[in-house]
Image (cartoon, rainbow, N blue to C red):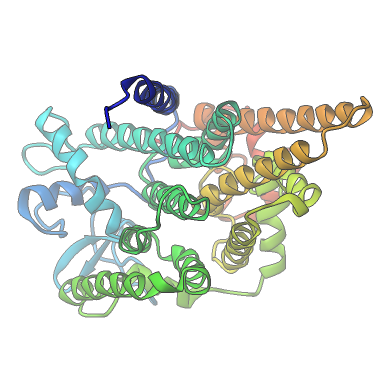
Length: 467
């Protein structure tokens, strides 16, 4: 039979057009959001301070220790429990060596980028081994911005699995600029910065499988989840939830999924035994310090307080909740909706037990940064349910049309408000001085409930912004 090129070319043309359009949109979203993140002046280099030194130590010396660097004001202090034991809370002294106190996953994942910047002459250490805060600021600020730009592109490609292009763009940009992605995760290399990028990739994998677009790779998914744990231990809640989802709905893949996770777990335990002589690094034992004495106040505070409330700083979530309540019967992926809701509720219950529950010196609901990709997934599923309802119940009269438009305007207003609130955290130094003035938030946590002086409206001058 002769090959009919006249039929093949239109198919190829359609495929190339579709591919180019999505690829171009994803690239533009990455460039736009990365540029916004890079241009935003506030940098929260707090917990992550000295972390890029670990990446440099891995590159140059093949070790996680910081023994060969001259760290400022470093001295041993007496502590009790599982806390850092030096005058620099980011550094701990274990078995005769100095280590970064926070999880090692991000240090490893950041190493290639740090190596690249080292080649360009940017380093977190001077040639004599002394600490270079300016170099670390450049490395952390640029890498965090690029990672969160990449996450915005992941949001777009995830949304495109179910939604038209325009809706996907709105959700991707909204998820990047209207959440803690802008005001927290893109400001520096918090433990959640790498964690939510890995989570975004994992959720894309799960949704692609659920929609029949791509078969789920249990090895890839287990690897992404394992590295989420290596970057932040509270991600274990999400790992368990996804594992149960795989066990229930994709049981034929569970064995490979579990074996891959077990292999990564064994490697992590071996790393910890070698360096710490215990199954897990010190930071991972902080779970033993969870407290319930202020649980209800903390739970409410993390949801609705004016300076730490999730629904205050990401009010667009109210519209997402409305979509799921209004169009629940048209949700074709209800199992994923319940998975996302379950993870979010469990995470809120966990952080209500943290001490301090108000997340110290930070902006807004920092402790819920780690579940932002779940918010975006819920947004995607909610919009898909709404569009399915429209397709099935297209009306002739104008009343339902007006109501529908009113709800969309309401959602758009909440999204704009979310963007403006998170913009302040990324650009206004007064919002960071709020943590110290008029009183230190760690000594006066009741300030998070003060509606007369909420953090996102802070305007008073004080100390210099965080560096």
